[in-house]
Length: 108
Length: 114
Image (cartoon, rainbow over all chains, first blue to last red; front, side, top):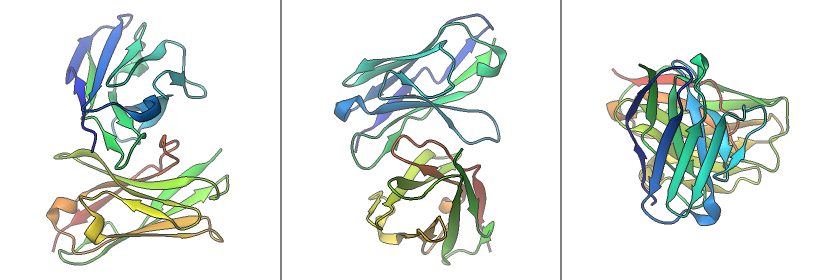
């Protein structure tokens, strides 16, 4: 199975800062089928990015995804107060589907 | 818009079977994969498996021997059974649509305890 490793574990930033989150796969993700989701306390995750680079419907353009193969990045250009949350990557290019362990973006 | 809602017992005894149902509203259950995912403090997010509207399934090898999924297209519902549960199966269980997992249900906490 593909192991996804996210870094850093925690990112301490201020509103208005740029956030850069990494997701590294143990082997190449087929068709770059890599997604990013956001989870807030007590809520289910919400899809932000799919296919490594495509924003889901209604997702603000301050969220962007990049990368291919084994290295992927989620960038939040300017953090808004509602962006402080945990972010997960998951791959859907092969079975079993797997998730990264998450990156927490917290207020500095 | 499509919404998913999990339902089932919140408490299951060790060695018994965990049974959950996900009800899909606002859209058809056809032509999608439907997944079960769980989240526990110790293991993060774990994909349990998925079922297609035809009834075809795929399970995580780590749980395959204990998992059964089924689907009822007439009721727009799909279900999860996990046999021989232990405390390690205590988690929030989510259902989700498609391979991108969009959207998710709100999740239901299942505690395994006597």
